[in-house]
Amino acid sequence: MSIANAIEVEQLSFQYDGRYVLEDISFSIPKGSFLGLVGPNGSGKSTLIKCILGLQKPSKGLIRLFGTEQRKFKERSKIGYVSQKANSFNSGFPATVFEVVSTGLTSKIGLFKFMTPAHRKKVKEAIAAVGMSEFINRNIGELSGGQQQRIFIARALVSDPELLILDEPTVGVDAQNVQNFYQLLEKLNKEHGITLLLVTHDIGTITDKVTHVACLNKFLHFHGESKDFETFCEHDVSMFYGHDIHMLTHHHDHGGQHA
Ligand code: ADP
Image (cartoon, rainbow, N blue to C red):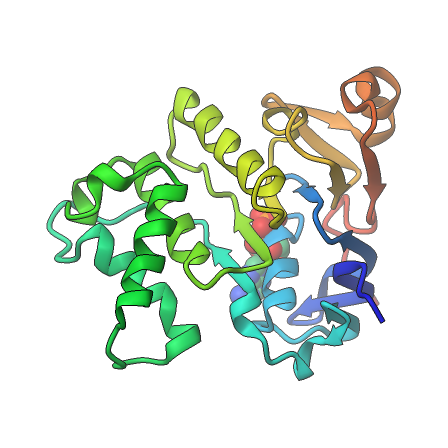
């Protein structure tokens, strides 16, 4: 049986201390697509990602990764993850770009194993794929936020993931580099065939790159402005021509407490 979806989420609910953050969320991410997961701050985007990665346990519902139920999924190296705060090493941090990217191999070869020449080649290829070869021997802390973020993508790429999950990866990256960064993601999606799940609070930055959009709240941010989802679709939908927009939920617009 061929598996069409990288991720399937069915009727997922999650609560912190009895307060629903996610309720009855269902969506799927077809293999090879580039999905933008949008929603304002606090709408539950990171929580949803944590549930997908198995770092949080949902109260209800089901998550499948490449057709296998989340808790039975063992092929961890198929999934790369770049977190929000990846790009904040200070200048004294004692690790080179090569070393940082090498740590991405641990899901494949385990900790404290020696690297073979094939592993070293893999690391170099991943660094080349993000356009950072000239920085390979530099200390990570000497790079800019945007450059560090590329290195963390390389670290995720080194285990040949089929799915790359990025949680607000451009926080702290300046506007020009944000565009370069999204071009890199587009290349990974189109040329390397990697399925992408990109979390962002501003849908305006990704409209021309993604193939699908999922919205986690009734309101969304578009170039810094808050818009009602339905109004947004009516007035701005031409920007999404060819995109498949899913409205996931609108239960907690007012931060409401559930009985
Ligand atoms: P987003 O990523 O969209 O900004 P989050 O998933 O981080 O949203 O947070 C969703 C909601 O859950 C917020 O109201 C946040 O304050 C709350 N929250 C997040 N983490 C915790 C936690 N560990 N304990 C309690 N509440 C939390």
